[in-house]
Amino acid sequence: MKIALLGYGKMGQEIEKIALSRGHEIVLKIDINNQHENTAENLKKADVAIDFSIPSSAYPNIMKCFEADTPVVCGTTGWLEKYDEVTSYCQTHRKTLFYASNYSVGVNLFFALNKKLAQLMNSQTDYEVSMEEIHHIHKLDAPSGTAITLAEAIVENLDRKNQWELDRATKDDSLVISAVRQGEVPGTHSVTYDSAVDYLEIKHVAKSRKGFALGAVIAAEFSAGKTGFFSMNDVLNL
Image 1 (cartoon, helix red, strand yellow):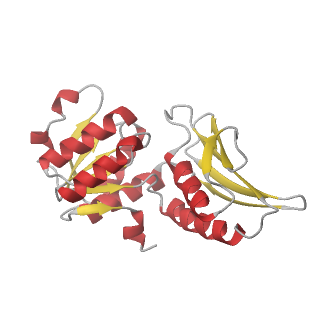
Image 2 (cartoon, one colour; image 1 turned 180 degrees about the horizontal axis):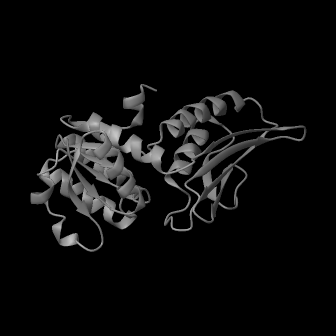
């Protein structure tokens, strides 16, 4: 399979290593130094593109892939104000987009666990829920896309929470997400239910970027030759 990498930072380089180890070929690598090569004509040379760029580049990169009829796997977060527009265009024009806020298999299992726990805790009104996410100092968006996915599942399944807020709550029905940036932490997410007598916590700790990169390559393998909008739920049958 021929892959175009849109974003060649630490994640892009890790994706390249895994893709090559699985027998794939990298036919295009785009970073800040060669943006002029990021064209629909060059993207047509790839069977699939993988975008781990920056929030401001994600939307134009996706649309350029659509123009080239090249399936695109997007792992960039912080652009979701365009999400409905992009998914609608994808489905209407029969393009291919695979999006996940996190490509780690473990995190996607954590998503399922978080949703189930919120359902169980819905009737346990003595427990107050909160979240924390910790990432490296280079991460541009806060809260993380992973944290937002976790928060949305809690809001959907816990009647006493109707929205999430960053760092502090202005309303009683708000779920507070604390976003911490320190060192080179790949990603830690925790959800805590606290009462007067005890607390219950679930946590996912990434040891390296390798798990995210492997998931992105698996998503690319899944997407090649397909049409439509996909997520890790389609790969993992969650």
